[in-house]
Length: 268
Image (tube, rainbow, N blue to C red; front, side, top):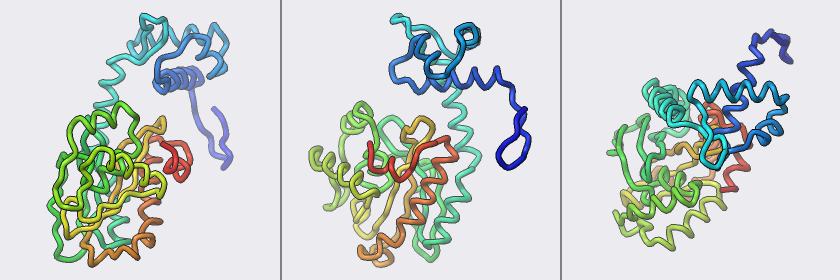
């Protein structure tokens, strides 16, 4: 039991805290980690670390690889995917998207990255008669939408290669479908801090997107707003970035992102 800064009592079990600290360290290690690396990072006595690690191994959450490094197990991956699907089904992102729609009047989307493509998992229709054809569950390439490009700009090299292997579609004359030009465009997105779809999927629409990050600073998906070019003149784009960035950051925090969102935008 401990007291927080605001005077409230927080009940914790130290042994469980230590176990989760070790588990998170192993999960966030790209190539696995040694026993000594865990001790140094978590600042645990050797006997405590030995007990915690063996417990996690016994429960099937981590294992020792052929290189004698501790790595996450398939069981943990399976649990993560189930948790992800549960998050999607509970619509916990509906409220921030409704706030984004209310502030802009435009249709708001939340998309996730999945195996080289983007999938729409939440949508709040904008005001007026305009009905956008994109729907919850829609799966598409990343190169012709602000949501897809906001994701692609922050993928690691292996995942970006997977995206490129699926091909870059030309939907309109504004679509960016050449590989070299697309990669240059992703650099521009990181430089300016947002993605723009200027009639690349539908010649009459203009859309803005920002990435959503999760625990470990990894890309989760993106938040975007869409409307007609008439409703969103190029000169007015920057006036909508603040509320879009606030929404993307808030959702990122819900997903366990702990870094500085603005700084993350300018670093892949």
